Amino acid sequence: MSDMTQTAPLRPESAVAESFMMLWRDKFAFVSALFLLLVTAAALFGPALLPDGAMTMNLRGRNAPPFEWERGWVYLLGADNLGRAVLARLVIASRYTLMIAVSAVLISLVAGTVLGLLAGYCRGRVETVIVRGADILMSFPSLLLALIVLFVLSPSVSNVVIVLAISRLAVYLRTCRAEVMEIRERQFVTAARALGASHARMIFIHILPNVIPTLMTLATLEFSAVMLSESSLSFLGLGVQAPAVTWGLMVAEGRGYLASAWWLSFWPGVAISLTAISANLLANWVRTATDPAQRWRLEWRAK
Image (tube, rainbow, N blue to C red; front, side):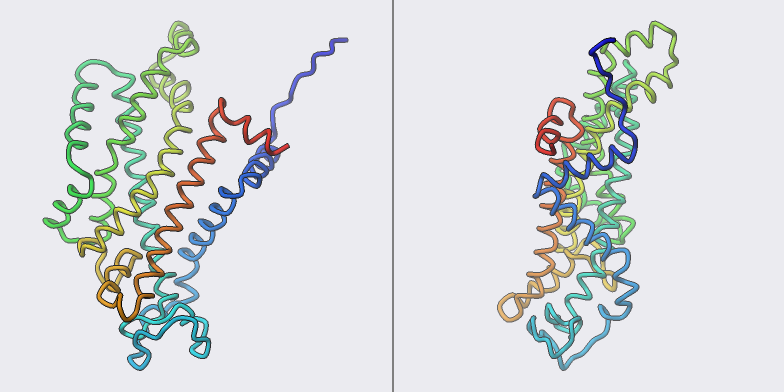
């Protein structure tokens, strides 16, 4: 009887448990994941729990300072220049901020992946046209391009999403193309080609699954960049317009009261910073967990 033992493949519940243990061992990533879950829950369920809290005005409570418990828990973080609860507006603004960031990331991820697969797998004129288009797009600073387009178009939610998606598309395209060009030369792809595999099977079965981990890590990092870009556009007055509200718009509305009511810009600024930091820390964990050359570090710490 052989002493060699074969390791059985992990069942789905075992894989989830192992991933959770690796996340638990990385305290920074675990806290980041919890914070992002909290923000997501606030974006999904907060508007239903606070339907009028962000729009109800109380001129007698204008610029009320934070931590005055007699006003109620909704006014825990203070009130703005129209007497609206800052905490309620933060919760409502999280929906618009996350919706814009996630939508822009998904659009640019899908479009950039498709174009990157074509540019990396196909050679000749198709690759040249796609790569030159990406070079032209990357020659303009993303924020400047967004400012120009939104200055011409109306600064609505849909236009902000489209502009941010287009400005970040080249990042996914170039990354996916580089990955595909390296993977298509590996031995298992060469063997599949020799066995007569179709182009569609080569791309979607053999190449794309090996590209997805890198792209997902990049998408997590780009989420922070897109959210900061949206906040910058709203701060400059070319992002989402009232009555819709985002964290960046809240910072812009409070900049005129920094000397007398610092909390108007401080709390949305803290929300933007913590969300961006959490996304970056979680992206670093995802990159390590999905990289076979680095995964052993988390597995060793999880034992």
